[in-house]
Amino acid sequence: MSRTPLLSSSIGRRLRRLWRQYGIFWLGAIAVGLIAVYYARLIDVGYNAFLRLQKDHIWLTLLLTPAVAAVSVWLTRRFFRGAEGSGIPQVIAILHSNTSAAGARLLTFPILLGKILVSFIAILGGFTIGREGPTVQVGAALMFNLRRLYPRSNALIERQLVLAGAAAGLSAAFNTPLAGIVFAIEELTRSFEARASGVLITAIIIAGIIALGLNGNYTYFGTIDIGSRFPDSLAIAVIITAIVTGIAGGSCGWLLLNT
Picture 1 (cartoon, helix red, strand yellow):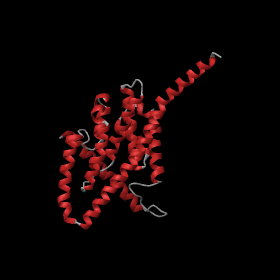
Picture 2: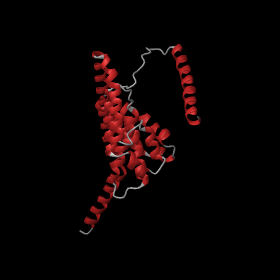
Picture 3: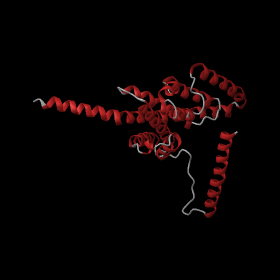
Picture 4: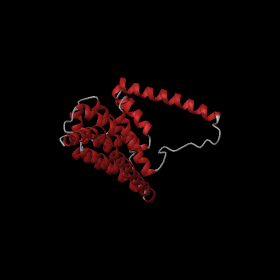
């Protein structure tokens, strides 16, 4: 009879440990996937609304766009400090500094909401708002705040949550789980920890599956129809394009870092 309470206690401890090791990450990945999908739809709604307005009242956009710019800047500076910019540089800075302190400033719930709200207002005004950066910061913010579910959170746990949220956001935003994994490894951190983390990779894949289930097997950037045979001329064009853009991108990066 005395073994039953001990067995129950052991099972309870094991379940709590599994929840902390896997459950919180997977719960966050599901939430990030849902937010990324509906945020993408929100941006599409705003962009289509601007196109309709531009088509029906082309001169109105000359007044609308500057007004929206002023409102967006005012909202960001007045209520959502930390929501300005792309979102990816903020996440990289958080991962390479004191995660607790930087995350408490740049990954709060108000910033999460502000990022979505201000980018939607901006797209309504005709601004070219890419949703990759905002989705990365929103995903990181959502996962970072799940640290409250840990009885004893620490810097390592918070860093893993930020990394998982950012990469899961990218995965869900563009239906590219592999890109999310590569992004996590090569763009946000260059440590062995990320390469060895099965939990991180699983979270990214879960977010991608959520997006796949809601949107179907779509290709965000489109596809190229080349028929049954890959043309030789297209192969040459691809190689030339890769060389030219590689040199241009590398040169641009060097100039930004050294001038």
